[in-house]
Amino acid sequence: MLGGMKRFLVVAGNMTGDMFGVLAGLLLDPELSVLILEEVEFATDSALATDQVPVHPIVLPEEPPVLPQQLPASTTVSADAMGKAKEPRKQRDPREVFAQKVERYREAFPTVMSYISAKDPNGRCKAKEMVALFSSSSVKRGRILLLPVKSLNAAYPLVSQGDEVAIQYVTLNAYKLKETGERDDKKSRAQKAMGLLKDSPPTGLMSGVSGGTSATTSVVSEPLSKEHFTEVSEGTKIVQKAKRSQIVGAMRESWGMKGLSLIEFDKFAEKIIQKCVDTRDHELLRKKRYAVLWVRFSGKKGGPHPQHDTSYRGLKQLITLCQKVGLGVILCGDRAWLDSKKIKLEKLATESKSSTFIDLTEMWERFEWKSSLMTLSVEERLKPIKSRIAQIALLDYLNRRTLGLVHLGFRSGNLEAYSLIGHRVYYMEEKGNKEAKRMVMWRSNPQKAPPREFLAPRYDRIVIDLPASRTGKFIVTQLRQPSKTAEGPLRDNMVAPWGPKRLDPNKILLKQRDPADDSLESFDLYSEQYDLTVARYYLKKEALHQTGLTEHAGFLESDLKKIEVVMAQAANDSDMTVIEGVTHWQKQVKGTE
Image (cartoon, rainbow, N blue to C red; front, side):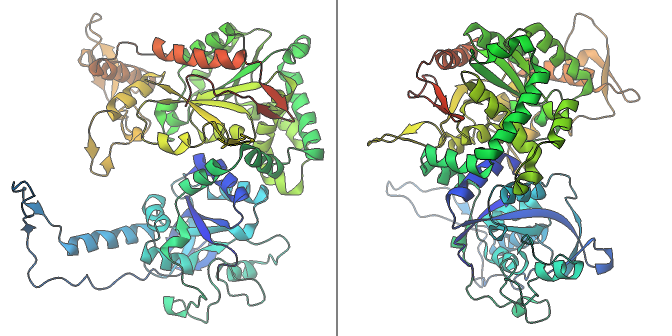
């Protein structure tokens, strides 16, 4: 039934930071397929549906598990070998456990015959972007499946861990998209999504439907089991075990970074550089090694890991540090999260301006980018992701035209992309980060036996004590305290009281009663007027004061010294060479892991 597909790597539609790692895993393992969970809104009335694709009801267990005649409220564990009696331990009522599990099913999947009435109702699901990236990057559409669900958070653990009821729902409702050249009329699209067209290959995980919509009418040639499903981290592990040359070769080929396509990308890049760099400084590009400093503000917009957002003072520190060790500087990424904040970055760029400073932040929003992109000729398959690949190709052009680039930023999926195409990349991460284990697998790892090739992409980590921003310092300090919420352990997005979804819009810190008193209590709260910037500033100041942090903004001096050691070694590495866009260097830099 699986038609060559051995395992399904399950990815929730909001896991955009994992996209490039998943893509690399798919390219390296042809027997791996991806199952993307797509958050949708369901309607029971087909007349309300915007997408006429019916979804089977989930079949929930109707009876609770068999229970003993008398269920004790608690049970006493026998004394241990030392003869000391242990405290009685409460045993959960199986009926309660069963009820909670059924509730999770209801939260994740529809329970009655439904139709997809809206996609991405919560504005966080990027399933379409994932499909575009994977299918445009040489992954056959037959290996990309979608599964409509009610909640990504509820469905992901059930599906990725191969829950029995979730597998039944997957078998009935996972579907693949139309292959190029297949029939495209409205009726055939709906039929294909349900596997009803007998003259076409089976759609999704169904091998045929004999009529009706109940679970008993689905005929599959081989039952799915828990072993067919794996979590998103499986893609990371596949990349970890592969040779760096193999990883880089697969990624560059999938994105057209060779041959005629590369020539077109280079013509495009030259146009952009001519607009951004003074003509007199073009020759300097070839004689300098550059640090690419990545700017991000996605956490302030409600995205994950707000502690990794950029601090303006911290960015200034990094620019000064890189110029001190002899590196030119290229700024990339976000310009600002609010229009009122853009002037801060513009001022910083102006102060840092030199013949070896290039500001490429939000390049994709500039007129010269959009006009040049329209004339960029790429392979047909790459057209859906042309702008994204053009951004990567621009820096790849600079990696080949200079003495090499050294990327630096906080851990992110965007940085991963550059390590996967062979650039030299270092990411910063605070000590004790609970997600550290997954990406450490990609660090520099030379083979012990000849020819001593490197395994993994050489995505190396600089461990710092605290992030540079005030928000980051507060979040990390709070996460290091033993605390839990009703939903489980405290998460970074739930910490900062001044976050975009946590600040009370009816209150503003407007009038300071005592100019000598900077505490929170010194300010009157008003409900009719609202100044978000002022409110955030004083909430941060008070919160940081309570945690005992004295250095509020910018990197700690001890962390700056760690970063300087790494960047200085990279700046003066005589063994570093760039061959056809791929950076090669021998030694692992001290201060990284």
